Length: 139
Image 1 (spheres, helix red, strand yellow):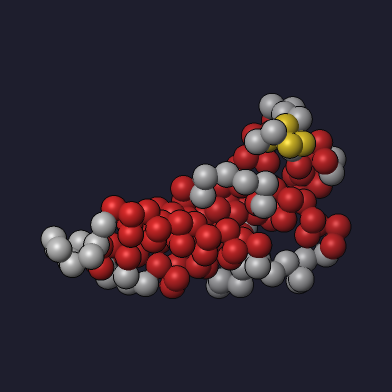
Image 2: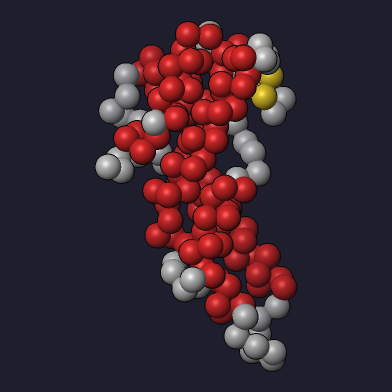
């Protein structure tokens, strides 16, 4: 548990550097979990746009907040995988929706989902990501 170990007290080897390294580990876990997201049950025509949307970068604030909250209450951050994936998919779905409504052609310096695939697949992607609990196998 990152936070509890970091907060054990003075002189026990816990430094800000250790905490920053722990945060980097959490971010790496979040990014790897996103890359490992299994979309094999989704038709290939609809699997590519959400993967394109969710792997396009970002700060991963929602996964980080989810993992840190688990650590604060004494749980292991790795047990929050499904929860932070749901949060991130829903968030990315809202960004796809926003780009379609605003006719945005770029997101984070790369073509938006609607620009890369087309508006119809963009809408279907947004709809699927908004219902992310089924996509990641929860429920």
